[in-house]
Image (cartoon, rainbow, N blue to C red):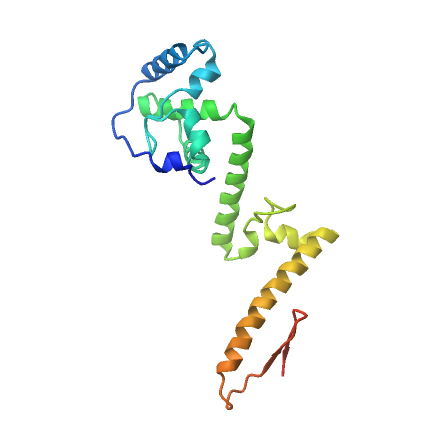
Length: 199
């Protein structure tokens, strides 16, 4: 969800938000001039220009194609705002209306919102188990949910992650052991089977 190279090259164009009617008229004219159907509401929304934010002046469709991560951040933020009768708020509502008609964007937004909830829960409780698994079959679930899942696949993932963590710990302690002097009271034997033996 990183911005595209094209998005990285776009600078912010500050200015006042245009009224909704002007934005919609400009989009319809753009569509008509490019051989499209200006009466197609979805197409019209796709070609409305952002009136705020980092990519002000870019079309909604361009935003979804070139900076989905930023679009998700905006949609999450806008969804918490109440609609108002001013050009800025109206443009935000148009963006929400457009995005709500794209299944893939809605799926990504649900994942993003789930991740935000899990991060908030992890911060609130101090329990890193609430963080989201971001890969594989368990993507979208919390580590806690995977840990409590008794299926063989979930347990295999937990065993694998435990082994990887122990290997990193073993590697670090072996490095530490090399620097210990003969008076060091900590003696650790590392094995290749992902286990640590403390003597």
